[in-house]
Image 1 (cartoon, chains in turn red, blue):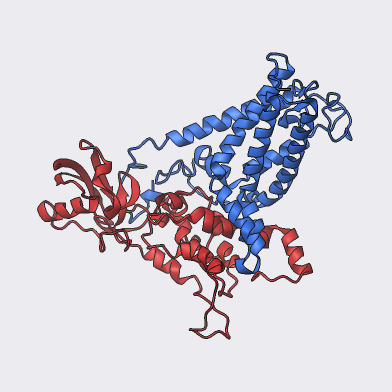
Image 2 (tube, rainbow over the protein chains, first blue to last red):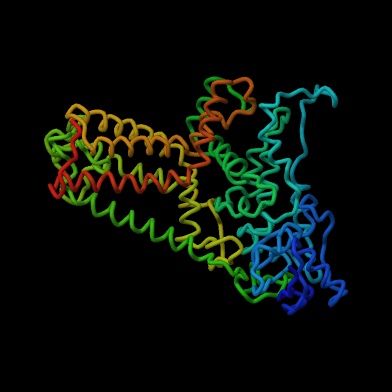
Length: 252
Length: 260
């Protein structure tokens, strides 16, 4: 059943901006991105929004709906009551370019800081062999669509701009975990996780996990295991002694 | 706000959050839950009485192990190597600091009290009130990395609590035995579901295929670990209920329901 919904959409740029009120038609089965497109078509032709697949797989349409970091294309209008005002703003952690579009280049900078997959030097591409049981932990993290909602909601950078330099954020700490747990990766990534990527700043409040549209258990399966690996190396003399006595390497 | 969500170049929105749901309710409930337990546990730990039911062998977990000569006859399952204690030292002082440390450094409780007590952040996408943030990189919060040591001691205390529950069976079977056993089973589940336990059992390995037994252990602990939050709260509840039951029976406020 169609109805007229009350929308507030943030419009502006890096200099200034404010919430604009709209009354817009909503039809059964629509998502918030459909309504934003209807606004473009009928009332605000210059409204800027980044989108691509409309299927929750490209990670382009990240924004905040009623203050919650969401994908616009995966937020059903049926989750709101007909008399509820729906507020749509850009992600509040990244610099805004215009309207709902933000500059997410912070994430690409952080991605480049992580050394790439490092297979054994004597193993040629095409000769990689690994068992499923060894690689499945890393595979969970490969589901990431890079929507950066976890980066957006993480209070370490959302509430503290000065931490952006020293903190890579949950998405890229998860990337470090993915490589660290990969059976063919030979790089030692634990010291960098703590020092260069700022793992110690994470206080595991799990907002990254809460907002992940791919339902990746970022905190339990990536961040906490990395914190435990750091504890092995930096804060656990028993593990250190065991490694020395039994000549264990970290690549067991 | 000149930093955080109010930093230059970000979307200019004055509100701390635009969330319209009751985001303040979970931290409030967490605070109330934690406060209730802390008050109850503090009062009972310093009470110094009604912790042992001699007739049925019930010992409350708050006083286990009771290792001092101040302990009531029969309640010291592991002897009394310690002299009489002044009243301001809880009789369970040997284990209590480690159990407190285990819960304080627990990855779930950290999330709970960082959000509710320290408001860092109070809820997702709700700006925190603090001007600066250093996470767990400095003292005192860097001590959170010692969680595994508290876990080792908590394992030992779980063994002691299990012994207490089994020892009580030599007096017959009553409702108190079921209460003690339920508490012990849940304490084991909470302790073994710990993230450090998951890491130690197998999570630290790079190749599960080379360590099938540890992989199996990791798999089982991972299943428990999913319920770590529920177990954290359930065991707070069973600890209070177990202690309350022992206190009521010991003070003769209620009789124990005996099966045989």
